[in-house]
Image 1 (cartoon, rainbow, N blue to C red):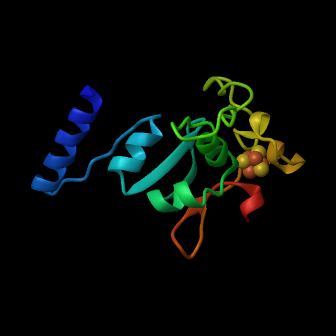
Image 2: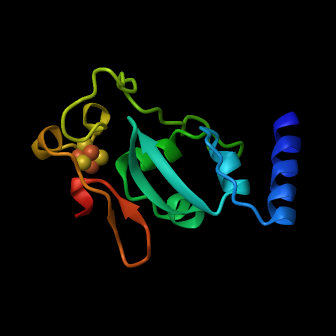
Amino acid sequence: MVQAQIMDLLDRLRRELNLALIVVTHDLGVVAEYCQQTLVMYGGRVAEYGSVAQIFDTPRHPYTQRLLAAFPTIDAPRGSFVGIPGTPPSLSQLPTGCRFHPRCTQAIERCTLETPLLRASITGQAVACHLAE
Ligand code: SF4
């Protein structure tokens, strides 16, 4: 309730003063409700970027996909919650290659060796994943 009041106030000020607002959050509900553009970070790097609609409707990075699948919703069927295996990396001991590879179910050998570049598609959605090249 307090969070919603604060977000409503910030959103009203943003509109009235014609400001940009950057929200750093793990709460996907806040992103869906208040944001236009979304930047998904993992291990200190950008994993994916796009409009809120792009990220929620057509996530292309495996981390974004798992993040959305792990987000509980009231109307989701019982037992449909799927967590992400493993734990986030320590920023002092980052994995080689793609930082998500120790937790990624789609990882290939290249993922352990090469850091994927952030590449944008013609739609403006950008993803840093070897499988998206
Ligand atoms: S680059 Fe490889 S490890 Fe990283 S998200 Fe893509 S498939 Fe998974």
